[in-house]
Length: 334
Image (cartoon, rainbow, N blue to C red; front, side, top):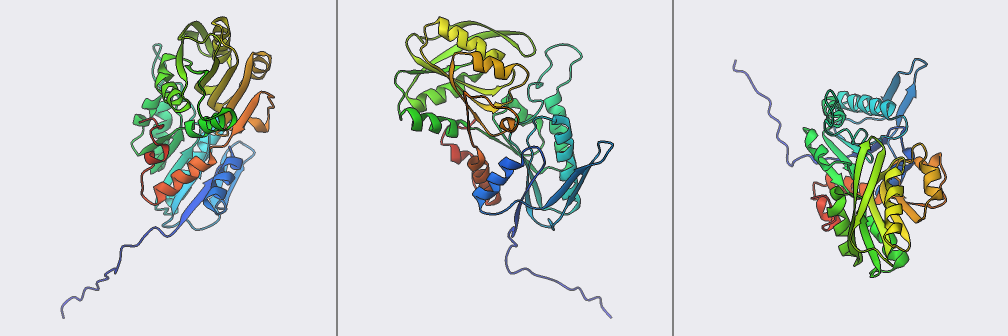
């Protein structure tokens, strides 16, 4: 008797039927906003820490065949949250999720993107390697300190920018065209971003020239551009101890600037940052909610705008296999 082979033929290609968004413990508030923008609740996952510091994870609903997104920023207990993210990815991979996209609003260790002295690590590359090896299919992050970090991953990376929500805030508050304003780049590495912002706001462009003798120490040497009698908006990717920004504000004031505003994607506000900002001549400082600094620190001059809608639209576009860069209309990092 001959062998009979049973054949199955699908009438159509099976689409992704489910999209699930989960949150780690680093910034659940932002994850909930993202899920709300998408019109559903966060997926259920149990995360806890044993007495010896080890992390436990169990997803409390099926993820088999699902398009899964995990939101975990790197702020505060950076090492714990990184490890938690890796454990979540591993659990999803072993539970047969179809695709695992990691949403990292603030990418930790981004400032260690190259060796500046002998016998130093390139930690940004190490973090990229372990996220990839853990099983991430794709990574989404925002305003990396160094754009080349995208190339450290062996999987697709969507490098988003908070520029649209930051510029919309200033346009809504001060008018569509800010003709008596100057957009200032805090260093030569941010000139391209500052130029895009200046074009959108109808403002002039200036650049701060600085040196950095050691970590978290910056010395601004001079202002390149005319700021006398102008309102100045400094745009940066992050504010940590605020030393760089305060040096820049002093240089701009010495150059005759009127009111000085500052905008940054990531407000880390470490160490003496709060006191420095409160005592400075900054008129207003606008940051986004990529990190939950505002849950533990209150700075009167700081205004927080949300990037939840950007991440939500990105998740939707990825799930539907459509362009992400088209969302930014030329304001992205391309």
